[in-house]
Image (cartoon, rainbow, N blue to C red; front, side, top):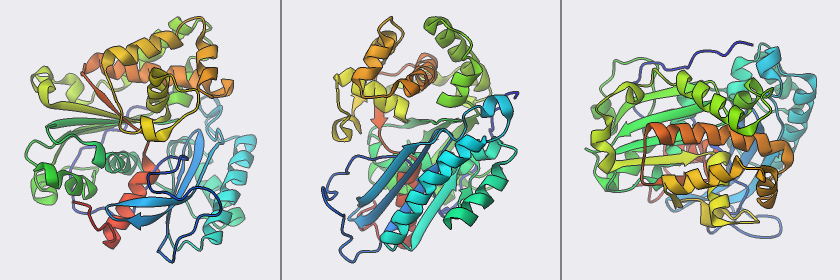
Length: 391
């Protein structure tokens, strides 16, 4: 199947968005209950499910001050988009794996009696010719009604999830979300937003398809310079170059091809960009970024509490990636507890990450173990007014 062009609608910011969607995390959050069956303590519970190209992930959480406390979680590699690049459709095997995972999610939602939910599907279902039929099948067989969100909503939710990690002295922020089937880049100008107001402004941000609203009036000075959804993620990029045997050759081809696909992104074309690097922050959210962080720390067992929010220099990231490209690639991946079936996805994700660092050199990348699920939870709770300290 031919690659589709990057989705980059004209940007505008409008008021508070409707429901949203969060991403992944199976490790207990700070303050989350450990061991035994989680208890909600009578609090209102929220569920957020993200069905992506490679994984099905869900969080069930309760509001806790300015954030939330995880009550239950689920994460499963379902490979929904396997062979989608070649066939253009979701396979029967992939559908079967995914339905089994969604049955588990439906059971958890019922068991916890969750009433406030946001369940979304992304790139694989957007691209597959049988994507709509599959989502109807999901509803029939599991009772779950998944919302097929567009790239603008996907990008917005990823940014919302990262709002707590924005540095107070940053004026320009690039959030990158490397998914299984697509990669979202959102460039924010927050120089005119007071540090104490930035989280609230980002929570209220909405990416619209067309210009025409006043972004400053809608979001307290926050501006979106540009955003893009590149239809290449770790799974789709790997499939496109799977026939190249040599790791370094495949890596170089993936990096070149990804850079070509984001060529229309305004910050990529803008020759004046180096002028803002002194106040520039890059935040990366994805399994690729957290894997690089864990590898840099030498972890043999993943620990979200030390990875989420950590900072990596460009040199440190390049050193880890260079190690991935060596002859001991599978051994290094195995040390991280990552199955060999996912090893090649780490390589394609690393090609995307290193391409972005080459285009926009930065002293530090902020690592975010969070994404669409967290974004959905923050958005729902903010809309309900239950985040007591969300400023």
